Length: 369
Image (tube, rainbow, N blue to C red; front, side):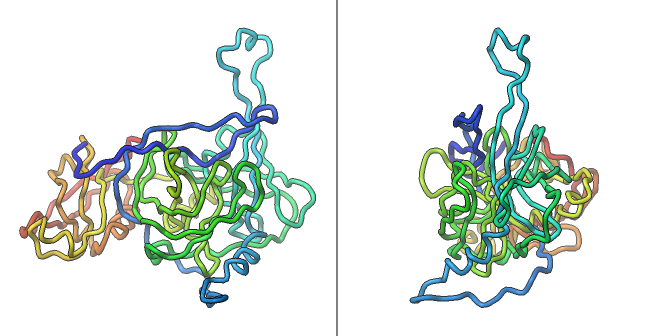
């Protein structure tokens, strides 16, 4: 993989596993971290209300009070063989329990969470505020690559649901609120800022593109819970945390979710097109280094070897300004444009290399990860 910048970072998914009632730990993986684009084009959501302010600071308590009833604990039972156990052939699989978080996005009991929270589940229940027992739930749709799953609560309702915001509109430095169940501590609230957008990471054997980064504390058990803006809208699904330092949490942008939500709710397989680039926003600060007058677009930082971008001759430092008939203003708009296509589609790309404008046709592929 040809790369401009690369950092090593150890990350873990923010799920919490309990085996026979005891903490069993979580998976850790080395991660190659680089900037990439943000999420996809916005979908209309509820109009944001004014942000309550107390003493010059956002009234976080009011936001949490309204949002908490829509945040659930997801309880999962899986059946896995006991490895390296000489008695395993006699006793078979041993049930394991895991837990994560989820957010209700429809009053009918539609819950959004991470796929790694419910992977391999033989039984799923959710704890909802106002109910004295866990309610059964079933998987409606899931996608391992995007690490997203949709559940349907069976029984109860109507439920409090949260509106989906616009993660593209969120700005670095904005206040954000995370609610979840870290280590089984229900409805834990943490507050921070949006630290960065467009992060790509590898965590616990999974690859993630265009994540939101936050310094709001995210811990095992937070997986699947919402990252909220100050209007109480969901702008991300909390997913991963660094094991090597404080203040490094990651969330899937809600616009990524919205682009595939109809397929997930219908239980359909999601087909994703792939260009094979790691990108960031092109800003005026990059222009002198790149010897270009281009001020905006998607700046290529990495090219995956053997990818459609590699075969088409794209290089790190190229600036994509158009894909198909869509103008590319930043990394997020490139990701949004690619999501409108399917593997095998041919698409025109206009890009700049220095001061020279180029136009090529690329046949999009399927992600290898």
